[in-house]
Amino acid sequence: MTEQKKIKRKIIKATAEMQRIMAEYFYELNDAAKTGDRKIAWCTSVGPAEMLRAMGFLVYFPENHGAMLGATRMATDLIPHANALGYSPDICSYLTADIGAYIKGITPLSKAYKGIESVPGPDVLVYNTNQCRDVQDWFAWYAKMFKVPLIGIETYRGVGDVTEEHIISIAKQMESMIPRLEDISGKKFDMDELRRALALSRECSDLWKKVLDTASAVPSPLTFFDGTIQMGPAVLLRGTQQPVDYYKRLLAELEERIENRIAAVEDEQFRIYWEGMPIWGRLSAHSEMFASLRTNVLASTYCNSWIFSAFDTEDPFNSMARAYTELFIVRSDEVKEKYIRSMTEFFKVDGIIYHDAKTCPNNSNCRYGMPRRLEKETGIPSLTINGDMNDMRLVSDEQTKTNIEAFIEQLEENDG
Ligand code: SF4
Image (cartoon, rainbow, N blue to C red; front, side, top):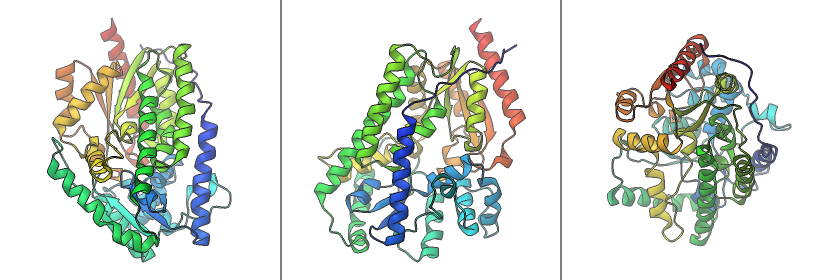
């Protein structure tokens, strides 16, 4: 029987600095929305943020707001307000929670940051459908609501090899956005500014990768749950100096842990790879549960989604097109499986947990036989849990706990 006891999880000291830069980011947006001094672009999480920064926009990401609604457990009560407008309970619960919050006139930002009463209104909305179609519908709703332009990139999905045709098409769509963005920002596009933003974004991406890669150490200095918090600057501030400085500091702390063999989860016995969306409303409960089982969920596809190794300042548009098409979520199952295989080897994992998120089929990779295929090839056991990133009515805590405990027992038995 798996013995459970309260196990200490190591707190990351650098987090206080991250909270400071996140606060700065939200206050800057809030001020700009009030004064109109700077234009604000809303962007999808893997949309062309570097272009927007280069053109002088402050960039706000509704998906981050959706995740905040989940993490603060506000989402479940807000989703029905979007359902009442005709948005199905089965579609993205970031979308439904976020629109629900807007209708109700509430935001978790108010609690986190004194003086912020609402999300910063947009001057333009920019999407890329590389992750899903939901973002397009989501942004289209706000474009009507705020009466501002909606610009987007329609991209490929289920991509095997990324070809020249893919790159040319996406790069052209990106370039063709420039005249409209110039009109809205009142600023001429400057290639040097784009190169500058791209260089900073690439540096951020490289550092973020190094941060996540520290989890390959045994014991791991980092957990997936830490990663979901620490990725904030990479998502929201890529293309600026702040995340670069922050991740240098975080990396130094994690490297020091490795040197001193300090584990994120005391007495680490099992190492797990998380495939799929986090369950935001249960992040802390899950982190505690796994720690009590001496198990570190230490790596994930999700946190790796903000690694853009193809960015190249010598070839800005083509390299952006490549980076935003090479992403895991855009690819075919064959490519995804190859990627997960390499991750399980690199991070030396004992098992994989797939989260089948009811309202995000785009990031639930267990529905077409992948777990069985991978298990057969690698011998690494896996478990699928049903749930959702935001809608806690779709999460059964008892069932999740029972299944995870049984899975860890299975790993113990396999260990002999
Ligand atoms: S990828 Fe999933 S969670 Fe993200 S916006 Fe699309 S449907 Fe929502």
